[in-house]
Amino acid sequence: MAKRLKIETIRSMRGQTQLFVQIAQENGLQNIETVRRWLRMNKPNGPLTCKSTLGIISIALNVPETSLLEDFDYETNNKRAGSPKPTV
Image (cartoon, rainbow, N blue to C red):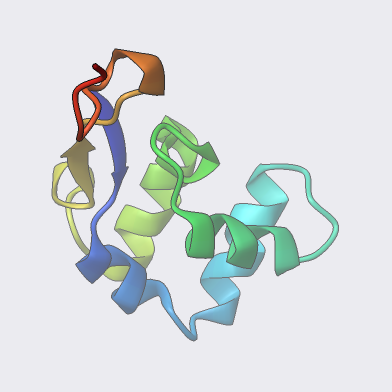
């Protein structure tokens, strides 16, 4: 089961430039644009879900780390998904 940030977490992070700067520094980035892209994409098991980044977000938002994430179930192999129309 993959993890990604909750929508509420993303909304709380918006506009907090200092938080983005801290995340960028933790990940060795030169600017915060990459962090903003990560936030827009919110990939399952992405860079924003790593332990060190979650710690920074948790402290900045004053929310426990366990409340920041949601489980995300996604199929990586689309061929395994059933087709909408049976083939004849």
